Length: 620
Figure 1 (tube, rainbow, N blue to C red):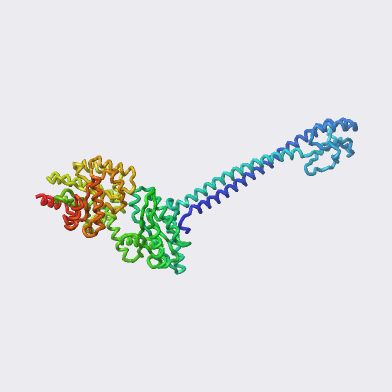
Figure 2 (tube, rainbow, N blue to C red):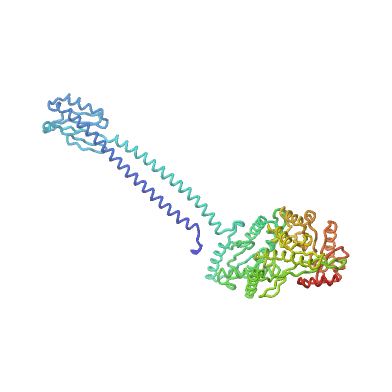
């Protein structure tokens, strides 16, 4: 880690060192205080001992006066024997003024009577008491006392105190060690949160950028190459919106596990965020980067089992190389990101090396997104309407509302040109809500103008469908416009129904209960499952144009289209065929039993005024 990247472990190490130092200082202070306390207690015991000994010697000396004056050895000896009641006194001698020993006392035979000039040794002390009579010294009493009893009391005090201090220090150290262990665990968790992704356990963007900076620095010094592969999963949003975020996390973890085993030792795989991954290769040449991209695409494209649902996702990969495409980590990642978007534009599930001219397209994409955010405020969104025609009578029985964006900066866009940008930027909810409201309002105006018998179809994106307010939005659009619910048809894609969860069933049932009709758009191109057709209140299937385009000349397309029409008829569901462009296609669909068609053969999407004119002309 560089100095510019703070590591919680470093701060923790400094903090632990400081706490340890303070704990050591506290321990030393405690030991010093204990030492002072022991010394103080020693002096207190010693003073008490001296005071007690002095008092006993003085009393004995007073009693000894007559015996000494009369040189009464037996009496003097008897008085000295009274010292046996003082266990600290080991021996004593009574001396006459000329230094002759008159009497002595010994507690046991091992003790020797003290001489007149005796000095204390070790744990013994000598107490001399002159005997006076009328101010004249008539003798001396010399007492030899042992400090053993005092030393035992001091030792007991020292032992108890030392044990108390040791216990206190032990408890303090145990608490500190426990806290340090918990702090270590917390720091480890913080470090993992700071540097690793919790879903995939891969390094996150922060750690990846640090490793990329280190790799670029090393490559610059060693004159070697570095490659960054920017990976974005295709169709991940579809899975996330349809199966839920938990399923999305399971898918991400599975993809991460596959990518983890691809690089060499020393290379890195990380999750940048969302459905984006990156692989850092160093040292690396162009051929090695290409080989890694091919292996990554192969690994990602294998089927995945998520909640007993077999899913297929692809990957779009952008590759940027040092030093050709960028001289620092930020530039390399940005260029790899740009190349990844080029891979998506080239059909997805492929990889592209960065080229300088890609930047211009990226800037244009950014400008489009910025302008799109202001499109509703500027009233640049429009609805065009394509006729839905009855195959038998060729009457216009309804219209499909299709978005157009008439931008002041970029001109007019069909929905296919900007819906992907709207989904990626999160603007699809606002735009979809506006389209629903505007379509209902326009249909009400047509009905008020005498164009009765028409229905309007409005497309719902998976994200819009899973919006918790969708049913209320539909209810509000009908109420505010005054349109009858039966005149509104909502189109959803099969991707919404990948998993037949209760939420989807309940929401579709609520919409059907409003009286709104429900259609499945682009039927047969997604995660088709026939079971939901009998479980959900579906009114219409829309055959995708890919099956209609060559249905009159391709037996396979004809068989698929006829099978869909026959199955729907058996279930009592109406069928609309999209993309009808000639009489041959129409003839086949009519023979197969299709009821409604739409396509350029009957009319391209038109503004509301022109569509109204067309309906009047057909009905005239």
